[in-house]
Image (cartoon, rainbow, N blue to C red; front, side, top):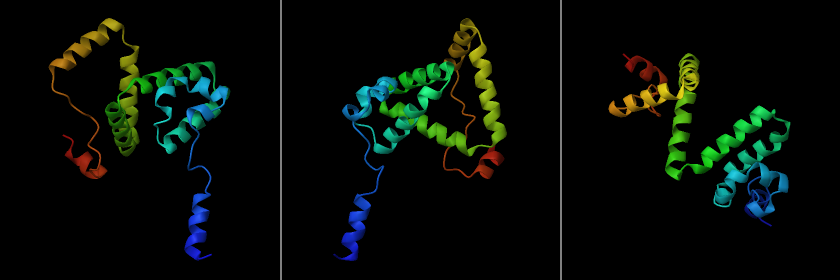
Length: 151
């Protein structure tokens, strides 16, 4: 056999590239990943692998973590493909900002979550009347330029 054929065969045998379809999951995995059932078979292999890792760790999580994970899974499953893409883009942008800014944004979010529902509704109605302002610089712009561009 030629070297190219050998390397192609070795590449095809690499484990972890293909991930199981919904029908091949264990009952435990299907129970944990139930909110993703409808989209599972269309999901890219690397995303399935990520969710399978979460399902593997799920039994060892605290009950509070399990509730949080299930809620986030339901929220994620309810998003449209475009909303998911935007969420991924925002996440990538957050990974590029300074730890101080990331902590400030996290604290602002926690403060908002602690507000009573009436106050949240008031803030949301105010936000609808204002043009959107992003505290997260656009992706692709070097961090130093973003920091200098801020007033």
